[in-house]
Image 1: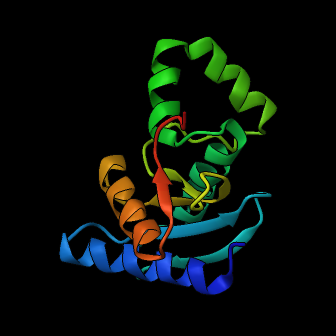
Image 2 (image 1 turned 180 degrees about the vertical axis):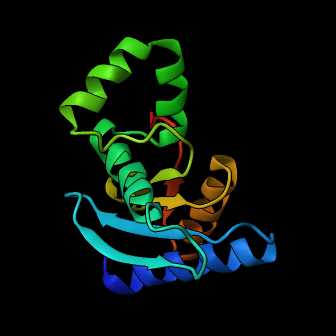
Length: 144
């Protein structure tokens, strides 16, 4: 089960990782497996649209069953399909790295993290650091 304490650990670790790397101010959203917001933080200086992007990265990961790194790769190969995804999801799919699934010990999806504020690759690094610190497995790509 995914708890608020787990989400807080993920967020605080991700933000600490961003500060160590001197990244731009981040916004971090953590959702449970049902797509419900568990916790969110936005650093001072992060733009107001960052919540929507972070939430969209996490939500899109849950909706597709893989992280937004893979969603980005698939969108580049098949833009027509992504256009359909954008439409049916009411624009909630964000094809940029930084949306990462959270897996438990058995490999079941228990939530997702979405981060926005820096380059997608850096957002993803911070998400993975937070997920692993909380004792879970990160899945930025398709889980076999």
